[in-house]
Amino acid sequence: MLNRNELEKFASMLGFTIWQAERDYLQHLFLLFLSKKISDELVFKGGTALQKAYGLNRFSIDLDFTEKSGLPEDLFERIKADFLNFGFKADFSMEKNKNAFNAKLKVQGPLYKGAENSLVVLRIEISLREKPLLKPEAREIFPAYSDLQPYLINVMPLEEMMAEKVLAMLTREKARDIFDMRFLLNKGVKTDNSLVKKKLLGYDIDFSYKNVANALKKAEKSWEPEMGQLVASVPSFKAVEKEILAKAKGWF
Image (cartoon, rainbow, N blue to C red):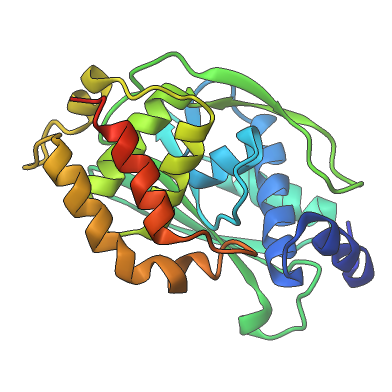
């Protein structure tokens, strides 16, 4: 386990604040323990998956998954024990509804000072609403931290993550979805209309150029304040909007 001085060095190397580095470190530790407990029951997705598995250049907070098959009932108890054996006390709570399984893992990490506000709360959301549409890809993750070993985890393919980002952009006003979409487009990931339409089933919204443009406009207000907490240098919203709209013309 890392101490504060070691964590500061990794934070500087990764371009994170020390608090972001602590969370990133504990996210990797959770994923490492998870990878040893399950095989293909979960598919890792979302911004943190893009950051850990594909090099997305922003900090990401939540751990998002889609359930492929049933999970062991004692999964989080076993992961809690793994954290303790590694040197970090952890407690978890969970809620479940028909659409999602949500867990909070409160960890006494490297920067823990004995107070509640110095705990790191890892939020884990497992979607139960739908199954993955494409075959997951087994990706080997190499944490930057010297005391963590590489691990293998099933990750949603980039084409399906793009479809999920389109869904997110059309159904909520989060600047990070726009940032992530630009990252995927710059990697050459194609937008598969059939995948997007399947993701939109059950939502009262059409996949159209007009709706994409409107969604971008709605996210403009939150661009600077939201992305300022997640990246060292915030790109111009107008430039990002122009890039995405130019690509979007070829989607329809």
